Image (cartoon, rainbow, N blue to C red; front, side):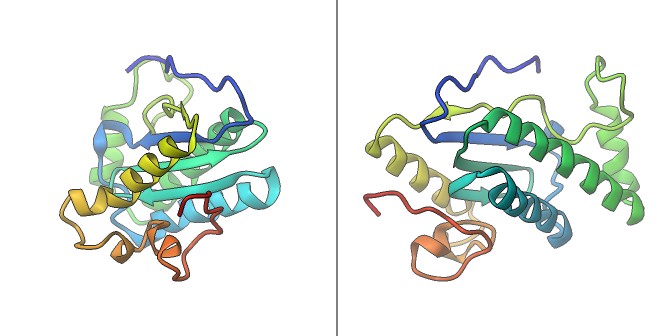
Length: 179
């Protein structure tokens, strides 16, 4: 897959973002790899002004609705840090099968590394109004339900659906109007 044609044009809007593991390899089946993602998002919230409206982490991809002064840079930092940290973790765990796949599917022009974790790009889509925000939040929260992992969105641990249902969650979330 080539470089993304999606761009961030206006930082005053939130963006729906998808980040996918290379070749849809199931990396987030271990709590430790999800924890790396959560910790990095918390860091960006605290140090970069990233606002998170909604999120879900599934076994091989994640969806976010976020806003910041520089979403592109924040997502570049996010993917770079999480890739290095997750690969380091997998190497320490001697997860040879997964590491071999990350090496095999690495894009050929990535000559500066032996392994690649994330597919290129993050497909930002601008949230232009309240109706679109509601539709995207519901899409994110219902993703684990559609996949048959849970019966109710708030049962998925790695999602903001719990927060929208009035329970505690893993990240601080800004709940938009209309919920």
